[in-house]
Length: 310
Image (cartoon, rainbow, N blue to C red; front, side, top):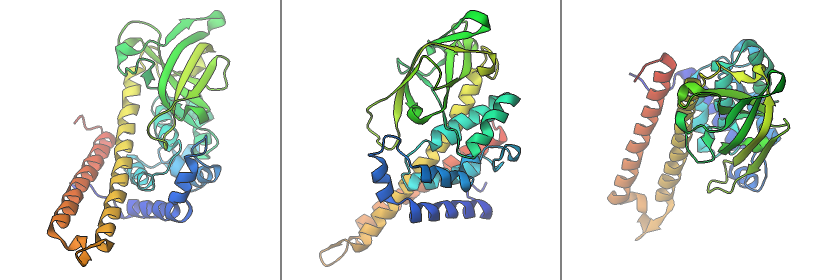
């Protein structure tokens, strides 16, 4: 089986790399680490204009109507450029949640805005305890007045919630296991929603604490089926894992390129260190590991796209 890119997908990857190298080099990345948003509006506008934000979105909603392999190609290049910002949170996690579980009205409202770069979303996977399993979901969804539901609790490590327009929030609406979890679309501007950025190790990916204090939502905010949201959340997480693997492959590729370039120019004992067999072996070992990671990532993407249970 060929785990590489097709000619069209390779052209897409090349175009992404060219844009990043010409407009968003490491000087841009470093400047964004001092920016509270962690990305520029110019980058987000470019990502929308070039179709990166709508890869998973059907053409009838203004997207590209492509698939997971194309997403992997773009994520590799974003990882190679160490590009900060909410791409994974919004163009992957939140978009996939809407594409796979959104109602017709939810998709009509949000997906075109995603594709145009007008809206940013994210998914709150983890509880305040750090758990991510169906029995660990404790954020409460309780009946409120006039047919509403009140959401109360806390989520942590929510990627890019500080710039999100809405958050997909798993809540406990009944039972104690996966059948009692419902997903809600919660707009961050709603009364009772508070977002606080957290101090973490990786400055390129902003993680936040999200607190919901009796936030009122109605039936239109339910994503998927009531008390059957866990399977949808797992599907979205699987897709996001593949995208994150692709991002890491891109970063590893960039690190290997930098290492081999250094081996060509760094001299010791009057010759480039890349001429020494020990250094060559190290670089070769890194290349083998990188290609293995790349192949596994593409295999996972193809398996998900085809519905392969393995």
